[in-house]
Image (cartoon, rainbow, N blue to C red):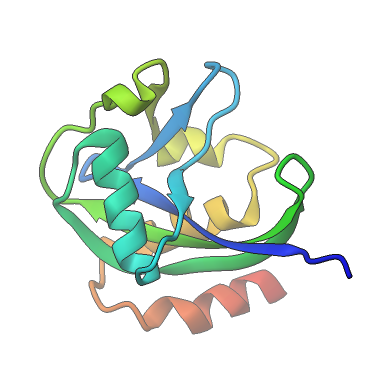
Length: 152
């Protein structure tokens, strides 16, 4: 009998007061959010641990879950379940740790991201929520609004 591995992962879309999202890259070409595997912990604890390990920041406000997806990772030959979380940096300066010292960090403005034609839906959702969040700190507002905006 073949046993297929299932792994929980999480990524964080981190934004700051300057309306910029933080991305990380190994090669300077492909950029994505910070994240990693969930160990014996909650998803929120896992992403906070990954962020602290990778960029040395622990002052973050948890905003909400953006997306939950499942995909097959051919390299690791397993199914991965990825939770995308939106968080706001409240203090500190992200700096790559020794573990990822060859990686690059880059803040990209929401305005610049909106100009990119093929944004993944999760990034579109993050931008939408950040725009709404500036005017209303309660989270529940966006769920109904987001569905309605996608139906148009």
